Image 1: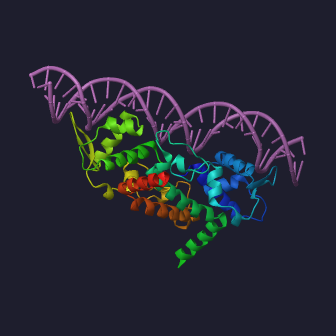
Image 2 (image 1 turned 90 degrees about the vertical axis):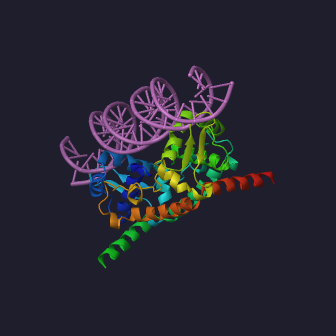
Image 3 (image 1 turned 180 degrees about the vertical axis):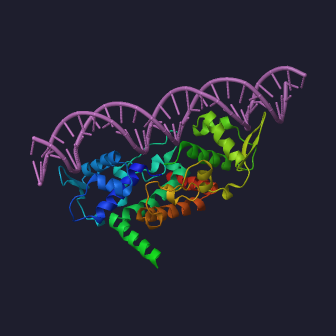
Length: 147
Length: 147
DNA sequence: TAAAAGACTACTAATTCTATATACTTTGTA
DNA sequence: TACAAAGTATATAGAATTAGTAGTCTTTTA
């Protein structure tokens, strides 16, 4: 399961993606629109800014905005920045690798082998899907509802 | 990430799968072979037994064994029995569904849409892979090492 | 210079996970 | 028949993680 932090981060980026090219958007606006606790969101946006995904502007009229086009921000990046490993086992994680302490031989572990496949499938989707894609898909979902 | 409970459960089933058709195997043997805390494993095997995956025999010469052929036990079942949801978001989980409490419209949520794809890809692999497959893959991995 | 807005640090509460402890029941065999 | 082997069951403790809150500081603009 994704942590709430990761979930909130993705949702915030989607909102900021829709706002891309316009004036920066305040934390409190994002928080109230997306029903995210404001103080918690502050921390998350700060992380995303420190990672270079967002710019911020202090003072009156300040707020946050995307540094890059939403089409160039991929979901997998957000997971990694917010500490959500893609893999279901630590021993198949690229960025959060850890040896399973009970494991005897990693190289010949059949369980690992299966979850390697799972990771690869997940990674493919998440590294091909951008914030812009999510916004586009929302549009499609809304269209389909109206029909 | 899978919980240790889920991991231990899969590993125990693999060991029992290799032992299928023979005399029941003791918890302590499985625990020491797989480096799993014995008391913890006890609870896990009990759950799997109550779910109908294992039979048990008390007393001297007792132990646990698979009820079904390892080719008929799929990894996805083990995840579900041990409480490990397949989905990365509660709102796309089939067996552990929960509404995201911050979500405004589930039907038009682009984030949900993406993680629905991820869940489907994961589910496909995990529901096609059996304990027997894992054992077979271990064999292949060992062969490749020896070459 | 006051208000708006983000930056940063620390802390707390809640939950979940992992593991252990203890007492009990069943079964085989000397 | 008594004892040892082995599973059953429940309770609980400890650790780690997550989620969220609080408070203070800094920057910017009107």
